[in-house]
Image (cartoon, rainbow over all chains, first blue to last red; front, side, top):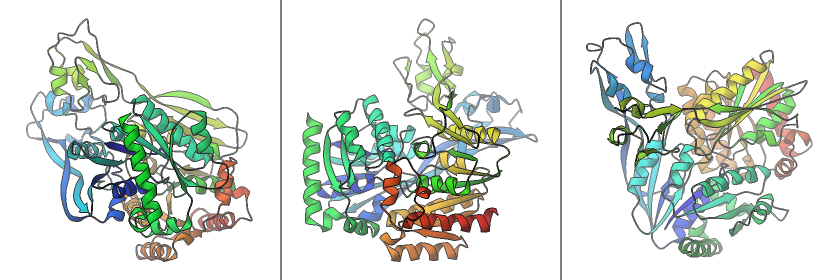
Length: 278
Length: 285
């Protein structure tokens, strides 16, 4: 069962929910797809880690062969190439690795080379296999790392995918392989606004989904009202708890340290299993 | 026009809370929301009239004309994004590179314009607010951010100070928002995640040569971590412009579509006023 945990808004508790779900399972995989700011490993502290670089293909122009025809410069939709003072410059950060420049160069002056943009680290944390994607600072797109993580997921078993915030291309890539989406929402107008976006995203990709209401206060909860209005299944309500905030700030895992939270996440996992089957 | 950009790395640390308060306190006449993936600033800045809206065209999408297609498969074979299956282009997979258009021996493929978001402009007698909403699953967020900033610069060129709410992360929308700003104010959170992400954010800002300052939000959640953040910043000569305590008034303000600056006697309201004074004297003044 592949569970994607997403939220639209940042800081609502995606990592908290996915890490704790992974720990509540007997054996599981936790995959951190928030490659711009991966945080799950800070809590899980995986051991015996193995790190592999993630590379993309970028053009390398042989100026000895180049006939200065500008074909590559004119072709590139991303403005990743420019002919400046008789030299072809390549701006790697904006290259999408489409390969068009090399393919269409009439002088065969462009070859492709690998360029590292980040890494995937694999390790173990007790019952959890931890996969962490990490984009190098200064790089624009983590999509190739997300695709690399996708290839590493096992076919079966409980897999928790910790998604990036937002509802753009990176969030979309992350839910592609999911069997079920858990939308984590906090009780603010911001939380509701961004919940409505991931709600649309899950519907667009025809993924079954339910909501976890996090940081619930006794006051009226606008996120809960949204769920009632749209007839969305609420899978769990996690109260706002200062002690939980303190545990979290130190990188401790509630489901491993506190029986009540362990029970809460076991129940949530059970509910997800039933939902994903039906 | 001086530009102050609010960033954080980690999401949910309080960028929009800080940005909306600074807009109110500075009486800024120009502001923008560059979090085009999940914009929220419009929910709390004082209501202006209905926005002017314009479709935003990002990268094009390829389209195959089935009547011309000779089903040779060269497009599928050369597409690096696995966007073509059974001689049809997947809208979400296609990144608009144009390789298939060029490679097709039957000229059966053309690029068509694709609306990847909506650009919005609010204005009243005093101020201009530029924002946008990216279409779901779209990949042109960096380009749209650049358009939001361009719109702001065009419409409010005589404003002295622009305040820009940024997006989480360190990738393309953040990189696009950083270009040309005078200072990035990083809203840090004293949690293990917040600290990790702040460091990556500082790295990114420095990579692009932008001056940074830091403020710590919800500092009293973990005082030891707050002190660690301040020591870290000191060691890199990054000014820490203030601490904001955890304060439930912030949630109440947001849920009433207000900024925390509307609650000047609240602990968080007082802290943000002091941050604004600090920034104004040391960086803008």
